[in-house]
Amino acid sequence: MITDLRLLLGPSRAHILTAYVAWTAVYGVLSGVAAALLVPVVEDLASGERDGIGTHLLTLAVVTLAAAVVRYAQTMRGSAAALETLSSMHQRLGDHLVSLPLGWFDSDRTGRLTRVATDGTMMITGIFAHLLAPLVIAVTAPVTVTIALFWYDWRLGLATALCVPVLALAFRFAGRSLARGEAHNHAADVEAGSRVIEFGRHQRVLRAFGRSVHGYRPLEGAIEGQRRTRRRTLGQAVVGLSMSGLAVQLAVTVLVLVLVRLTLDGAIAPAAAVALLALAFRFAGPLADVSEYAGAIRIAAADLRRLTDVLREQAMPEPEVSAPPHRPGRLELDHVTFGYRPETPVLRDFSLTVPPGSVTALVGPSGSGKTTVIRLVSRFWDVQHGAVRVGGADVRDLRTEDLIRQLALVFQDVYLFDDTLEANIRLGQPEATGTELAEAARLAGVDEIVARLPHGWLTQVGEGGVALSGGERQRVSIARALLKRAPIVLLDEATAALDPENERYLRRSFRRLARHSTVLLIAHRLDNVVDADQIVVVHDGRVAETGTHHSLLAAGGAYARLWHARTTGQGWRLTGGPAGGFTGRRAGGR
Image (tube, rainbow, N blue to C red; front, side):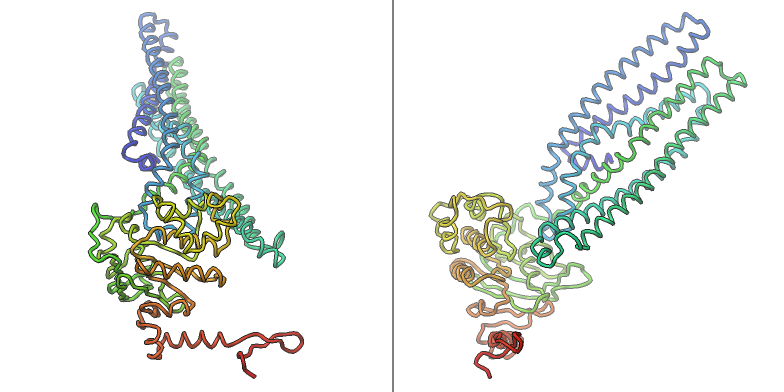
């Protein structure tokens, strides 16, 4: 836990944790020493010794006062450390997230990260305020008491030392039981939460098929699984906590029995035995506290570990200084081999050159690797073999900000931030003038959207852009790219599922982008790529054909077959059939 906390705080703040642990350890030692000093005081009182009792009482008072001062300082440092963690944790996490490869951010990791960064925040900060101190004291105070028992009678010290391995095994068993249960609970909670969100987001589909209230099995199954998991893990937790509590009681019993035996044998005076009995309970007290806090400690430690696992993710390696782009606007994939799992390549010895200022279209069946090409250019991941070059420089030799400065990305799934329409477009170029903003909006057809919105440019579009339609959101993303005026524009299925009106605006925007940028686009609608300077047919992770629309048709290869399938499909239409049904027939056919 301490290692994870140091990682969470970072090198510049790790001293906060070191100081807090040190103060807590000192308090644990002083509390053990104070308990040990009770023995000579009790012995002096029982024997009537007046000469030494004053010295022993003064020593006890000094140690007790020192323990109180240290306890105050330790508590204040714990509160300060908790506040520091709360204020810096998300900044530290955010600074690391921006260094991770874009491919790391899949839906599963993002969902788990959201839960940890929200629900786990207070639990993690509570480690400093409530949980770390009992753990440190549970080590330092019993060790101090054990040394003191060795000092008074080696047999008591030996009995105490022999109890330590038993206690360690019991606590280890309890910790593992709680850890397994917490991991299962976390997985069940994530699954149930995902199903609830899915249930809420897709009410239109569910209601259309009568599954809006009952009968949605994924949600019902997740909730039932969550209930079964919690019942099972509760039983495991009870067993583990019972074992640790029993071990503490067993240790106390052993010490009492040894103490009674030594007293009966005359090795220890009865009065000293009473004081040593209190010392034995001081040995067991911190251990009992840890047993009581075990559940909360384990949950906090698990949340902490999930957060630090993110911080342990390898950042995208970057050079200190980017290589100069000596061929602006040029894209090149040189014998690239890449797979999301290295043993299953998606691209195999893939080579492609996109000249500056040209329009290149990637076409081919789903799963052939087209989107992977776009993502490798954007450096979502690094290739296993070969090289990807942007502007003549290997993307691995460019800093992220320098690479992204050369690219404008437009994806099928557009995300707009919960801000004004203007702010969402200015994301492409915050320093753009009003004239430049208006021109980009006009070309992308956003001016028409602005004209009908109640507050024009200052209209809040809502989280994800819910105030706009899908086609309108796509227009906004194109306006961003136009405003950025990057040397290279990447378009991944930007025209998919758009109505003719929105598609018209986007085609006009593509023509303007091609005037000053290199354009690499993916499209399933072949009529959107007929004017491209080169069309690349991708099949099974390789380049199958390259050429213009007319040259590829004349070659009669894969592209010609795709074009023929498209034109043949356009020639069919639905007509009325018998009994009110429909039949398919060629347009103009008989």
